[in-house]
Image 1: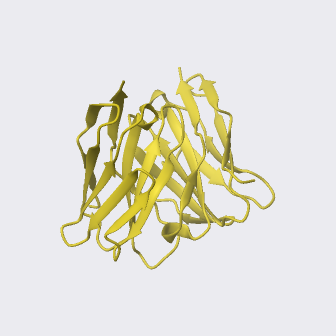
Image 2: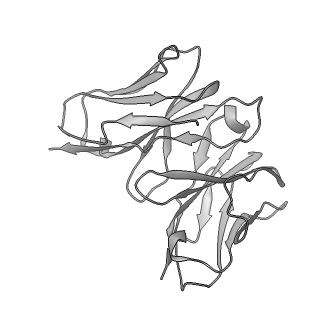
Length: 114
Length: 115
């Protein structure tokens, strides 16, 4: 597709439940990034992929967060046992050239943990 | 630690007026600096991208400048319109030899255009 598609747009989970977010990057883009926006404009880097390979996962809280980008499937970000502080908007971005190229963002998934 | 600081935090101006937003960064070396516009409830949309060798870049009524020596950038908006109301985020990409490292985001300037 010509835009980064994120689903769902909104997600509400009870504390301790699992949450799974999806991202379809722009066709032909090799790089996918996940970001967490908690407060106004505070973007926190989570993880990046080059095709299906994890490139940088230094931002991931590994105990509960995991992510995949498998061939012919949307990328996914999964949070096991959600906590209240996981409430945020999660953005996915894709890029053709990695850090040197234009990064196109999806509309985000707003996760609310209650 | 790589940091991007933006000012002002918020700004209110009348429709038709010009404004300038500031961005200071400590990221070094860096690959490129971007300005994004983020409407409420939407994802960021790129306005400009500049490499370290570029001083200025325009996109319609938006003009970005970059001084790599002082590590400062500005975004100038000319003849503001109501649709310019949004958050403007300065994003710096650190250079690490290529790949998919994360971008360093500023906290943004929240701009409100009043009729």
